[in-house]
Image 1 (tube, rainbow, N blue to C red):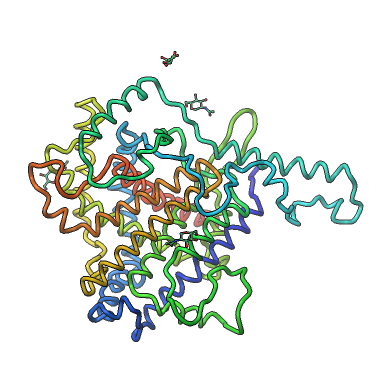
Image 2: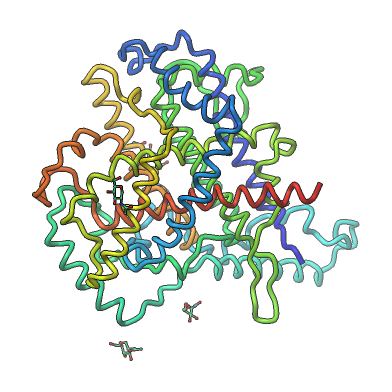
Length: 491
Ligand SMILES: *[C@@H]1O[C@H](CO)[C@@H](O)[C@H](O)[C@H]1NC(C)=O
Ligand SMILES: *[C@@H]1O[C@H](CO)[C@@H](O)[C@H](O)[C@H]1NC(C)=O
Ligand SMILES: *[C@@H]1O[C@H](CO)[C@@H](O)[C@H](O)[C@H]1NC(C)=O
Ligand SMILES: *[C@@H]1O[C@H](CO)[C@@H](O)[C@H](O)[C@H]1NC(C)=O
C-alpha cells in the first residue's frame, strides 16, 4: 500500500507556489532588470554587467545548455557522491553537536506535533468517509475518523523523534574532543554550541526522510522565511509572497516581476539559495518516503507521485524545472566554497580530531581527495560579482546578508518535528558556513602557514555541518537521477 497524504500534497503545492513565483520572477527580472536601481546595487559600478557576468555563468551552465547540467550530474554521481557518503559515515562527521531544545524566539512553541494540535486540524474533504459525506452522519463514524487523525499524528510524532542513542565509547570520546577543541582558540563562537543543552546527535541513526510533519506549523516556518526574512525593497508595491493573502488590485503577476526588479543581484541570489535548499529537502522526503508499514517493518523508498506533485512542470505550472535549477545553483555555491576552503585544511597541522590517529589521518586524506575533485571541477560559480560594489555599501550588504541568514537559522528552532529541526539546522548552518568561506577569500589566502590559531577559523560544528550539508545536496542530485529513470520507465 502506498501512503500518500493529501494534506502533505496540498501543503507542498502551496509552498511551491511560494517558491515558484519568486524564482520565476528572479529569472525574468534578470532579463528585464536593465534599469534596476536600488540603494545598494546602484552603488556597485556597472550593476548591469556584474549581473550579466554572474547570470551568464548560470545561463551557460544551467539554462541554455542542458548538457552542462548533465556534466554536473556525472561529476557529482561518479566523483563526489560515493566519496562524500564514505566521508560522512566516519566518526568525525557522523556526530553533530546541536541544541534542539532552544525555544522558538518568534512565536509560541507548538513543538513535537502535540497530539492536541493535530486533533483540531480540519479534516480534508477527501478523507471524510463517503457515508458521512452523503449525509447519513453518525456518531460512530465521526469517532472512527478522529481516531485515524490521532493515529496519523502519533505516526508523525514517532517518525519525527530523534534517536539519541550513543554508545558509552562515543560519550567518552566527546569529552576528549571538547578538550581538544577548546584548546584550539576559535575566533568566533556559535551560541548554540556552548549551550549546556547542546548535545551530540548520531546523524546515521537519524536519517533525513519523510516524517509526516506538515500542517499549519510547517507552513508557518516556510512562510516566515519567505515573507519576513527574504529581502524586500523598501518602497512602493508590495506583492505578498503568500499566495493565500488577498491580492491587491488586478495584478496578473506582472507586478510581481516589477517587485523583484528592485532587488540587486545579491538579494536575488539569497532567494535562490533558500529555494534550492527547499527543493533539496523536498527531494529527500520524496526519496525516503514511508511506503509501507506493518508486520513490524517499515519500508522506505521513492514516491514518484509525491515527486511529481512538487516538480513535474505539468503539475506545477511549469515551475518545477526552475525549482530544480535552484538546487543546482545551491550545489554550485557550496561546491565553490569547498574548493576555496581547501587551503585551510591542507596545512599539515590541521587534523580532524577524534583521538584515533590512524582513522583521523584516513579521514583527512579522504577529505583532501574530495577537495582535489572540487578544485578540478571546470564550471565553478563566479562569486566575484557579489558584494563587489563600493567598500562601505558592500560591507553593509554583506552584514545584512549575514543577519538574514542567521535569522533563518533561528527560525529553524520553530520547526515542530525534532528530526526536521535537526536537518533544517544542519543544512542552514552548512550553507551559512559556505557563505562565510566565500566571503573570507582574502583571509583564507593570507592564512599563516605555521600558526594554527591565527586568522580564518572553522569550528568542528561548522566543518561537520558544511560537509554534511554538501552531502545532502549531492544526495539530492543523485536521487534526482533516480527519479528521472523511474519516470522514464513509467512512460
Ligand atoms: C535507536 O537506534 C538503536 C541502534 O540502531 C536501536 O537499537 C534503538 O532501538 C533505536 N531506538 C529507537 C527509539 O528507535
Ligand atoms: C554505559 O555507562 C553506563 C553508566 O556509566 C552504565 O550503566 C552502562 O552499563 C554502560 N553500558 C555499556 C554497554 O557499557
Ligand atoms: C527574523 O525573523 C522573524 C520571524 O520571521 C521576523 O519577525 C523578523 O523580522 C526577522 N528579523 C530580521 C532582522 O530579518
Ligand atoms: C591533491 O592534489 C595535490 C596536488 O595535485 C596532490 O599533491 C595530493 O596528493 C592530492 N591529495 C589527495 C588526497 O589526493
